[in-house]
Image (cartoon, rainbow, N blue to C red):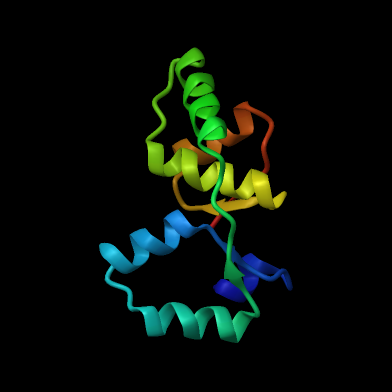
Length: 105
C-alpha cells in the first residue's frame, strides 16, 4: 500500500508525526529508520508556530477545530511545499477547504 500512496515520491515525515509514531503509535526508532531508508525519505522541517496559529485561526473561522499536532503537521508540509497524506478525512477536508493539497492514505 505504501508504494501506491507514494507513487514514486520520496516521503517527508513531519517531525510531529515522527514523535507521535515513536511515543504512542507503537512504532520504534528502528522501524522509522528502516522505512525512511527503504523509501529514501527523511524527517521534515518543523513548521513555524506562527503558521500553526494561523491554521488554527482558519479552522476556527470555518467552524472547525484543529488540534495543535495536526496544525504542526500541516505547517511542516507547507514549509516543505509537499502535499500531505493522511487517513484523517476531517483533516483532509480542512486542508481542501483552505486550498492545500491533501491525499488519502
